[in-house]
Length: 614
Image (cartoon, rainbow, N blue to C red; front, side, top):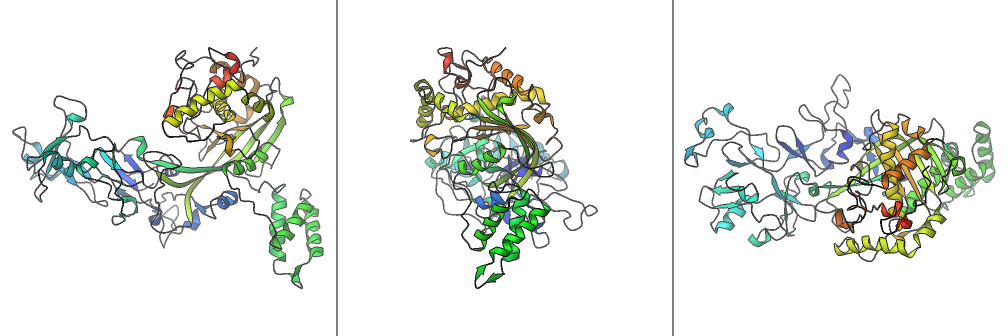
């Protein structure tokens, strides 16, 4: 976001902020990012900010991806000068930090100063009343802390007027004015008191809870301020009172993808481009309604003489199939199938230094004592596309509602592209499968399953022990790489190539991509790839496993029967296996050092229990 006063990084509009999110700015400003309808206008087209990612676009039904516009002066770019991401003011209830006078401000209104209408507080004339005739001396109103949200993504101000009068059984009249006060004998919610000029009064005690507003007959009004002042819908769901800065007020629904310049079925970029040229050239050239296979074959061979790495058979078959409309669809139907495309490319030598994806694959036999791996790929160049699909409130469960991000149907979504580098670890799936099939492994994973079922996170799904192992391994490895590569652990990310649930496993893949991807200079410094070279990565892995054997919170941590959200972690806490939010793709869920290095009761349960450290 950019204007003359406030700014925000453009990738922050994907996460942790975005459409419908309350962004706290300096000087007690609280603004909400507006819907996509308001981002561009007739004078500024979104087409000038497009990001190309054919594979991800196909997966999302042909959606285009648009980078949030950055603010530019006329001297920099006259065509796109002074573009701003629009925002509305929220919450609307504001109060004076000196006298407690409360006012409601419009969504597009400027900040206001106290009116000085409250004459007395505790029997004394207020500072604001005394300075009523000197507006510039009056304090600026600050936004209220409390808001109310529903599970469908709607949001509104905490109904303070209704709360005060229902608690006091007094009617609301046009002359009612509220005063906010804090302190007294309690520092808790009961110390925050609202008093009306009619005599009604109530504290915030008991306001937090699903039935607190329902008890006074107040339910969701379907308010969607990010879409405009008149975009309310019928709702009536119970409201949950939260502080506006709470982490569960807004969850971004973001999908990320490793950009593959050519689809995985193509051998290389030149083959893909040859196919595209052939389809375009022969689309309207037919003999008796049929394609001329002789001319197409000749065309392909001529192209191969220029670019020797073109796969002539694949190019010929693909052009024919496309022109005859017999080509099979290649859009993946599941997350696993989509990631399998990346897995196949990243576990091979692909691309070159000119491509946006360039990796060199090495067999595990070229490394010392890494027999649990099949290969390691040094990804010298990669590009990640991160797309904002929507947002949710209260919980990020698959069953929760995704809120509307535009009034009208829009053909594009906000996205950013980041460049970086990484190391791809391909595990020996057969060894992992034999380990995961042991009864003692299943019993330990069942503890997590039961914890999550008790909290409603799981129903009948069976967790995949291999995923938990790979996820924990990735976290421990990121911590170790951080101290060796020069990157902070918040700059290193993970991407797990394995299904979380056994029944959804559609392919036998087991891999971990540890990578950096950033729009700034810390995207590809070369320090991470260098750590993947033979003679280096062995020591890093040893360090990761060795440090995983002891946590500052042990023995409490290693003996845990459930910690973290939904009790989805066992031996994993902030002292050992948890990472910054920017690093983990699964919100620090499904982690267990016990599956990595064993437990106090059974050291053999860990996959790396016998790993050589010397």
